[in-house]
Amino acid sequence: MNEKGVLYLIATPIGNLEDITLRAIRILKEVDLIAAEDTRQTLKLLNHLGISKPLTSFFRHNESQKGAYIIKKILDGESVALVSDAGTPGISDPGEELVTLAIKNGIKISPIPGPVAAISGLIASGLPQDLHLKAFYQ
Amino acid sequence: MNEKGVLYLIATPIGNLEDITLRAIRILKEVDLIAAEDTRQTLKLLNHLGISKPLTSFFRHNESQKGAYIIKKILDGESVALVSDAGTPGISDPGEELVTLAIKNGIKISPIPGPVAAISGLIASGLPQDLHLKAFYQ
Image (cartoon, rainbow over all chains, first blue to last red; front, side, top):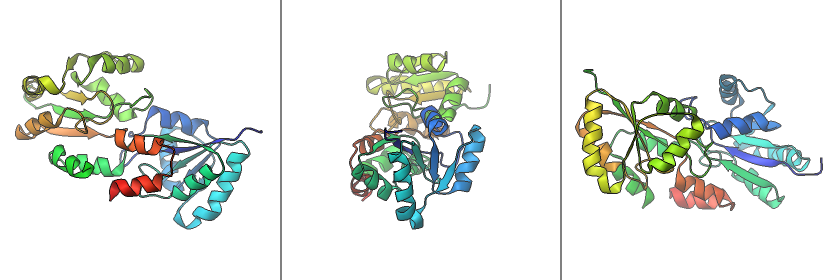
């Protein structure tokens, strides 16, 4: 294949396996490979969703080496989904370096939004949202 | 019914109708009433999901009056989902006053996480995430 693949950054559930979007599910079904911060955690999610797909581990301490491997796959035309343990990849999670490397290689990056740990935590606090959120956005 | 209902704060898609979680869809199907910032926008989403449910408008200028109506429904045992035009209710959207009123009345509030406009905007910028996100969280 001559065409480059896509790097998807997929937000995954935080705590509740139902907290995943329809688009995230579709993309996880469509990609060739899923790079996961914690493959056991991601396997639990994929099993819950009835998705069977090749998985590779991608965490802070193999980010450089595994990043090069993933970029090569995408340049060869495969599409890869990067998922973190929970929440949005690149936010308090590995992924920054891979995104930078993808940009340098002219790879299309497609972020799939979903639950964000910081926001979920703030809202789930049960206290009036406005106080927290105003502080958060200021 | 003697038991109080629940007030759900449901995050809805920003731009892409597929950006809604399985839990949000389930809750929208289960509640008795949906309070929407823009009923036309929410109707578009509900039609897309094949959900038919009573809708009431809830926006900044009817927040006090409509808030009292919604709280009464919940105290009577109905469950209500609050959705904003797009994204997470209470974040740059109406809802703060209703949440405060619900807390005062001892009503259970259940936030259903999903896409957050600020985060989606930052990630979708296409620029390296780390710079933006570090600035965002500092």
